[in-house]
Image (tube, rainbow, N blue to C red):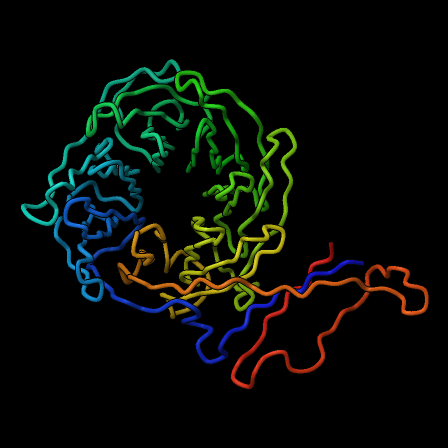
Length: 399
């Protein structure tokens, strides 16, 4: 039997709130927060947080990250759900209630005269259904300037594809996936991945022809409530979340869409079986940055996707475990390396992570007398593996 021990060395005192993540700043609101994205002004060099709120979208300057300052606010429909992505100096915001359509925010003067906005509300025929775009649940914008909108009121919520690079600020409708409600999506190159929450699976499409997406494959996820997904840096692994109590972050080999293989499931060890819900996973440099509701922000080493190990955390919600409170979203892509977190209850957090890799102790279990491999052996670590003020988490995986 070949085995892998994965070890993350952590301080016993700070584990519940702070492991390899340092607090930098916070901005609280008098309304609930939802999703978050980041932006850097190409002229001023100032970094910004763009955070969805119950009644609008807040634009926050991080010129002094220890003192985040709101410099713009775009009012909108009263909604629990907003999602934000950027292309150029525009932010595109979806709202899942009301008739805002797609809100387009011009950020070019955020540091001087402030932001301006319009609502894109075209009348379209989508999958044979004609109507006006009123709302949507999520948005993704790929590296080529194509936006993918999930859960709109048109086309039964299939993913609408928009060109936002040809005429910045004025999207051009390109096409839509089949009539299958998508809760969230991610695209890279000519491949689109959709989180089909009510079907309980993710679906993969070839979108080289934006007007005619082609089905490539699909895969059920652990608890059949596929909420969010994100692709690894090498494009081979897809990470997913199921928005259910005690669900995991799943890792899937999607290199062959006709033969998708589940590799691992991650759950925080400290809150197992406490009803904690994973919300959104992002990937940066083979780390998983996870907004984990009442567990706050969690960093996971994904360099070995078959053995996912927690290497950092910061709990933004200390009132209890389980339920829909705490960390909604996390954004790890600012040039400064800071992570932005939106907490439903306590607003915007700015963190500075220290990314460290997990440790693995690998070997084989064999009979000393004849070198025959032993299956199903019980493996126990005896003695101290860390210094006196540290604890060690050990995860053994049989391969």
